[in-house]
Length: 401
Image (cartoon, rainbow, N blue to C red; front, side, top):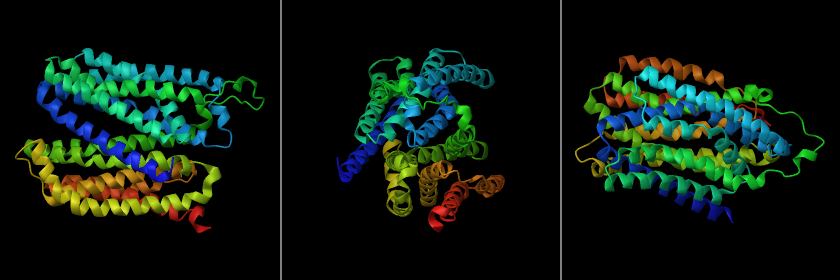
């Protein structure tokens, strides 16, 4: 398929999956009891935190699949290693869930069982998703993403027809459970059948890539933290009415991350491929142009139509233009920051010193008095991260040669 057809299809996937996800949330808010919805929301946060190792593992595997010896990591021998990592991750997930329940004083319920079942296959899901991504089978990935979005949408519709709260809970965890199964089913054909005979096979463990794995985990954790910490801070600073406005806008602007995720899916296999260095400059420049376009559209069209959309979801809600603009800038900056940071990790370029200024700026939340100031400071923090990775890229040998 041509690049134009691929880009058009992935754009359609991003819009469709984004719409299905955002239609789902108002349904669940209306039909789940307040207690159940809050409990599910806390469990989703636990899932996000516990999935950091799996996310970091997936990024590492994508880099290894694009290395000069990808056969080492698609062999049956490596599958044995994968079972070991999956076992330890399963133990880590179960322990993490019950630790979260203990500290957050949550009741052990059917949701606990759903969460554990969803988390355990996370390593296999990350591995096979990275494998499919490395093979650039983007149409297949797109259809899987649509199936996953429908797996969330249909249980939410079921809540409207039946008064079973567990259906609403399934809408949160079913997509997490079904995606690893689909990635495995379609990705297993890329596993080498005769890998046992490879005389160059070497014992490969994650420990041999510990430094790279560590930084991918740091990046995954930072990405999840920046998606959630602003809402936590808002709850600490503002009244419930202001927090509701902020959370409503924050949920909607995260649609940008869905779209940028499509660019990441397409571009990372090339950016992590050492044999395609001649394409790195072109891809990076195109991504920068896309981010600039994202900033412009966010601060103009999307920020003005945001309140119109917000009133459809919940009549009476209104947010200032600058709140919309700043939060859109935050999402665009965060999405492209992650892409460029993964490229730096793959190129073994250190970027840890760019974290200093954003950490210092976070102390500014102690002197915030309005939602505009709050969203503006948050946008500045993430924009600093975005500019920092660009500085690292343009000052590297890649662009100086």
